[in-house]
Length: 600
Image 1: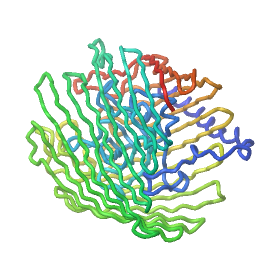
Image 2: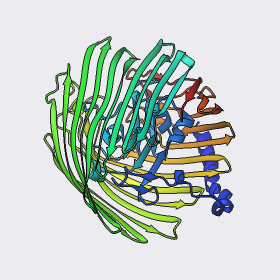
Image 3: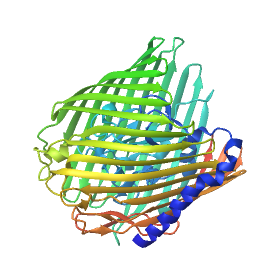
Image 4: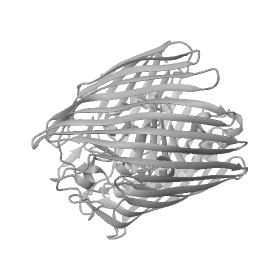
């Protein structure tokens, strides 16, 4: 696989380099395509187009989500620029998302601005998020500790639920199923009436699953998700809204089963204090709950994160200043005897977005005071230069930190209460070419991490870790074709041993191609990654793999459509992690799914 991967990567690199040349003759004739230069809000806490954000950012819009119709959010993220995924099997099994070589606990997941994570593991339960509940994803790579606090070391991924932008009620229904006795059904309604926007939805997913160990038994999974979102804009420009998203289900895994709950809820109010000052207050709560029934005993892990965030935006001509404060509290209720079961964090932050065209400057600073691990100051500065209206150069420097989780500190036989918090310094240089019907983006970066927390048994700090990498992404919309490509190289090295950090692939390619054919659409994705190591000594090697996913759609009547997907079409046998006893956690082989949809 390694030789084939290098050969294919070289060919793909030439193909990506030639991609802009192939469409350059048509650039001036094409209308502006906002999907290729989308507005993002995660990178700078304020709306900026991708080329103005001074960040390495990938946006997966509603059309992309509906075309690919993934079973899991991780299927959508796999192979995106700078993103790696590993999982203990398919259909609801534990999954980890790595951004630029940093682990799940070193990245932030937001749902409509509300952070979702487990206080015990530190990471998000990606496997329990139904992709049909969202219509957009923003992937921001690089440290954002000065904006979002602890854990935003490798990047931030934000998922957005539908707002309801169309006048009048817009109902939608979907029914489908496929391999492994999988069934999916969903219904929702959204719309806008006057100043009120609303979105309500419910989805149910169930499957018999497949074995996650070779010659093992099928491991089933079911997930019922519900969403309620309502907001109102008043005549004076003030806005208020509420959000509730809940996923609840049952999962069978290696050695047991569990009942789980993933939930975010929030309420916000935003006021125009003056013509140039808006103030927003958000109160939110996120829950990660798991009742486990295992062969070695039952257990409960319930965590709750409550947050109050006050954010103020001041506009002065082309410049913008954001300042605010945040207070959060983690609480743990578990059958495991943790030495501590709660901790609070208070923070203040500010950011300046300055436009001295053709130069732009973004600078931010944050101070955190945590009840458990003390005070931390993080900051970032980014400089951009608009070369000719189409090419933007950027350079960024940022710091971040990652607090030890409850498991890392206190879990019996595993935790180490003497752990230091992880801290990092990152530098990045990049360039983006933005045209009407295509774009390309390239970045080089290096992240140095002090006190990286690791260990397959007792946790300990690694004095120095260095992660270097390069990313190249491109996208084209031309002649009914939508094409996207990404190349990622990552070198995550433990400087003490010179070995690669475990569970990380160092090279990946992702190619997506879709075409509209009147009432029909066809497309496919190819994702390939090289080998990774399960252990810190780089002795336990997991082979690389290449996946081909195919899809087709048919608009057979007004508001009615059908979609078919064939995941892992070549029936690749691939593994991204192993159990502690050395057994492979295998992922699903070839799987077909058919669904019928009504609505927009």
